[in-house]
Length: 483
Ligand code: BES
Ligand code: MN
Ligand code: ZN
Image 1 (tube, rainbow, N blue to C red):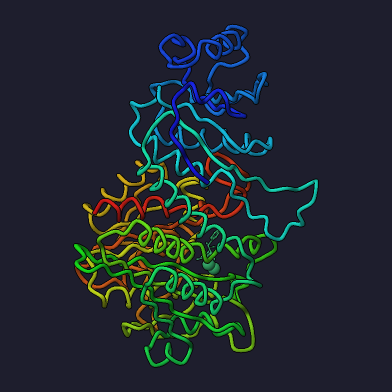
Image 2: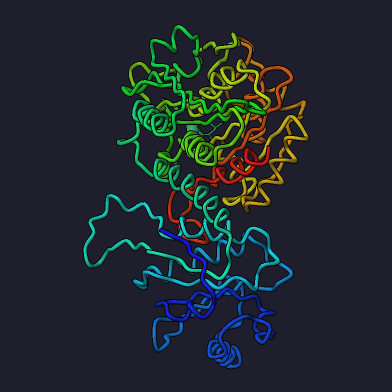
C-alpha cells in the first residue's frame, strides 16, 4: 500500500476522507485548511452536538461522493502523537471495513506534533492486520485492504520508517498468534533461518545434541518432557563498522502447559503466546535490517515446549546452567527463567554494550501492572532512561521495577543447590528478575522486560487487533534506532 502526498483540492475527489480533530479544533474550524463545504458540514455536526471530538469517538457522514469520517482526539492538552496513531489506525480500519479502497487523511493542522508521518506509516500498516488465515473467507467474512492513502503532509521518509515499524510488529504478531501445533521450537528455528536468508543475517541453530555439548542444562531440562526438542537460535545483524553491539534475548516457550506442575483449567489457555518474547526478537531483527541501522545486533531465542511426559524434568531435580550454577527445581511451571538463564549466558559471553531480554515471564507482573503496562527491570540507570524515553516516544508503557531486595535475594538460595527456580507468591516478578540476574555477566548493562499480560489482547483497540500485540517491539526498535 502506498502513501501519497496531495494538496487539499485533490483530496475531495476520493472515496473517503478522514479528518482527525481535537475538541478545540471544533471551536476554531476557521483556522483549518479545509475546503469551505467541508468546514460547513463539520460546523453543522458540531453545532448539533453529533460530534464533539472526544477521545476515541468517530462519526461517518455520507457525502455526495464517498464519505467523511471524523475521529476525535480529545482535549489538546492531553493529545500526543501516540493518541494520533491510535486514532488514525481506528479510522483507517473502519474506512477499510466499509469497503473503501482509497482514503485521504487530513492531518496537517496537527503539525505541532512531531512524527505525524511516522505514525501515519505505522497506522497504515497496522490497521488491516488480523489473525484470520484459518478462517474461511466467504461473504460473511472478508478481510480488507486499502489500496492507497493520500495525505496533506509530505514526509515520505517518515512514512516508510513507520511502515517498517508496522511490518516488524505484524511479523511478530503473526508468529505469536500461531498455535503450538504449528510452531514448535524446530519450526521457530526454521522461521529464523528464513528471515536470516531474506536479510542476509548470520544464523546459528543449536539442536539438542549441540545444546548438550554447549552445557545449556537449563534449556535442555525444560525441553525434555516434549517430543518437540528445544533449540537455541542465534541471529546476527552485522554492518561493516558498527558503533555498538547489543544483544536481544527472547523467551520462546512455544507452549507452556506448566509441565508436571501442570496449569489448571483456564490458565493454560493462551499459553501459545508464551513465545512472544522470541517472536518480538525476530520482528526486531527484521526491523533493524530494513532500517539498515549501524549497530551490531544479536538476537538470541531460547525455544522449548514445556510439557509433562515420561522424560519431563521434575520438581526436586537439580540441573546445571551454562555458567555452572546449579538450580533446584521446585516448580516446573517457572520454566521461562530457566531457558533464559542459558540464553543470557550466551548473550553475556558476546560482551555486548547492553543486553535486553523480553519474556512473558510471570503472572505476578500482570497482577501488579495490569494488561497494558510491562515491567522493566534494569541494572543501569542510563539504559533504563533510554528505554523509558523510547517507550514514551512510541506509546508502549512500562514501569520500572526494583532489582534490589535483600529478602527476595535471600529466598533465591537452595539448601541443596546454588539457586531454587521459584520462591513464594509475593514479589514473584521481582524474584524472577533476580533469578535472571544470576546469569548476566558482571558489569554488563542489562534490561529485563516482563511482558506477561501485555502480550495478548482480548479485543481490538487502537493499533492492536485481537490476539498477539508484539508489545516491546516499538520500544526496542526505537532504542536501537537512536543509539
Ligand atoms: N508463562 C507463564 C507466565 C504467564 C502467565 C504469562 C500469564 C502470561 C500470562 C510462566 O511460565 C509461568 O507459568 N509463571 C508462573 C510462575 C510461578 C510458577 C512461580 C506464574 O506466573 O504463575
Ligand atoms: Mn510457566
Ligand atoms: Zn511460561
